[in-house]
Length: 275
Image (cartoon, rainbow, N blue to C red):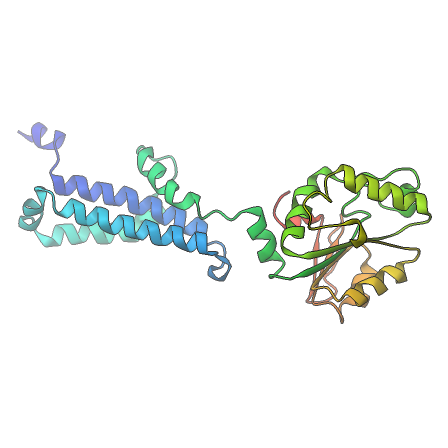
């Protein structure tokens, strides 16, 4: 008799176990999703959460209409409430992605999948919806780090192209650099064209600016009045801190933050979470 009762379970127990698995997985996914501040969630993320909530509610109502409903009502409420309260208190802590019932995880993953931000959404969020960006070329867009190197060649960093194209979709982007001769300008423009930077329509050759001094680049930035400026020269970042809303200082060695509105990163790919 004892063996028979242990091998079979009532509909209520099956429901409770199912709810535990679903709620545990939902708690796990929600804790991951909300590691990002709520204010940064977009409409797709919020829609995914709302859709999941609605699905759970209708699933629960459908279960309650099953023949086992009468059996649930006859069972002591104290036992069911105890199971539910213990579920909500320990689901997130006890759940791991490697539990035996992967089917529940697959269903919940379907709802959360559409809530993952795209690179374009991340770019807009990180730029605080800025509309104009200025960026130097050497050490940020190009492999080369000095004007002297540009006299020999210009090479666009392949890892930066995707981020660059996303910026051009939401911002008015201007690229600028100090060069020593006209041949260097031609090499830079050819490298950008070969990399496909001009194909998206967001960036044109007229928005690639050249000057002969560092002061000239700083002057370009002040005249354009961007929301963001990206540079590798700490002196320029310090000089522009009073005039530009936000800046990104790109440096292999993380420097001390010179002003509250000046951020730092080893690359713009890393800044946007692509590295």
